[in-house]
Image 1 (cartoon, rainbow, N blue to C red):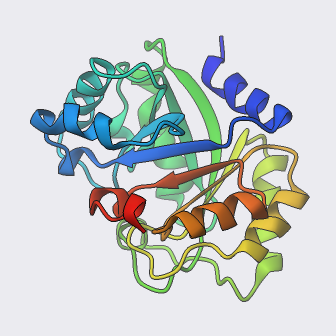
Image 2 (cartoon, helix red, strand yellow):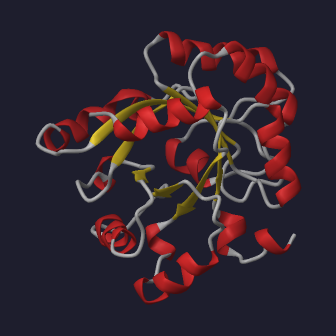
Length: 237
């Protein structure tokens, strides 16, 4: 039963609630801080994403297990590679890096995950992942050896998102990259959202409540925050 994906679609169709995911990098996670972490996240948080471009073996599983002991929020794996797959989570974003042309992240990592996934009771959500230029080189660029799409060429971003939808992706994820200088622009979000009939996730470079609201107003169905929250300055902005 596709509980997580159905929940996202229902929220989008009903226009409530606005979906907010907090992204946790297992390599930066300390289990001793988990109780304090959940006291800090806002009540509007609807999902927890777990993953990173590179994660030490076993850390993703341990991180998710600790989260599940402290929260009933859906926990979704946002994997950098196949090694981060674990049955401890509720769902997995089965990512294809549509903005790049490196087969390793278009299909090869996905193939490597199958022998483990076929034996797991894990909801798998086909997701088109599109890296957009956020003003600095990010970890995804370095690891995937691919270039982001330029925000000055919105038609290319829209076409890439639609290609993902037409190829069967159930979610489209626009990502400016961890630590981006600037997030995906509202005009890009609006153009992509208006072209799609599947939910749109937006993340990267969102450091303030104002930027969060701009993303929602432009059409983002779910916004993901990570670096700003880790630095402790997001909710004071």
